[in-house]
Image 1: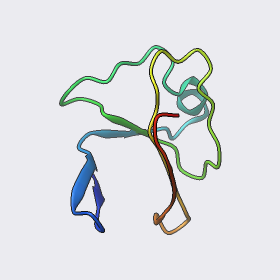
Image 2: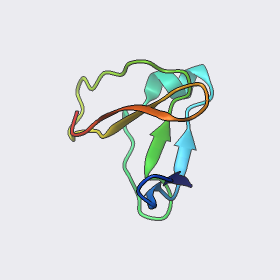
Image 3: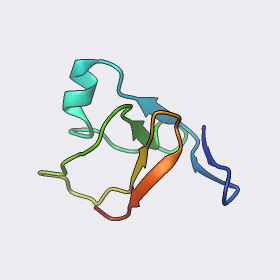
Length: 76
């Protein structure tokens, strides 16, 4: 789970981590969010993303090395 300690809200109940090069390259291509199975894709050590050919907007949260939020972009 991903929890915002400042607001006391859950941001994700079922995150998936993009750990290998294939998953990082694929990103959200061909994926659908399914309630109870997958609601966030987490990229560690990532300073930028693109949304080419996406059919929906993304909410992005950028973290530092200590997993503290440094930036938020909504409806990217």
